[in-house]
Image (cartoon, rainbow, N blue to C red):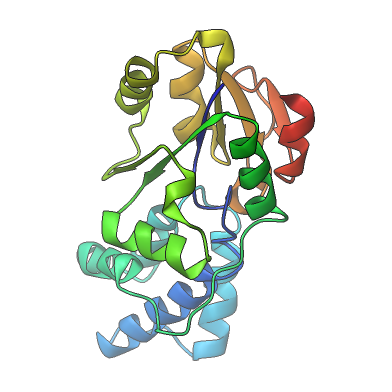
Length: 217
């Protein structure tokens, strides 16, 4: 089977590690730009609460800047989210992700990674999570959140029947709808931002840890 994984909050726990760090960096950035944010701790609590309801970091940043009447800082603020992490920063995987990937690979499945963001930053996340890139037959990093053309390319490259193609991701609209529209089977990972989304028609299976994928397959 061809199994395409999203990275953030599917294989790695971005919301539990990278996001809190970047939110602190964001507040520090606002303070340096003389934006009136109030106390650091209060601002952090407010932005954390907002982030829990947002479908992406972009939305969190946009809404925060609009509230603070500083929308002109959006591009500069978003650049913070792809800056390198500290040298000793460790990103945990979602539960048992490494073992599940190993098992699936040993069973002969074709594993690929399709993630959105800046390529160098996404690859850095893999490294800091202790994941070996070679476990994936292909790694695709999309600069935007439009994944449909990438699913099409993967389908053509690996020539798998649609009944044997699975897309696994946390964000239904970005990760799963494009695959569903092409006839893929979809698996919703309820982790991090994935908890915001409710099961919808585009979802064939819903899981809260990757080990459940072994049962589905």
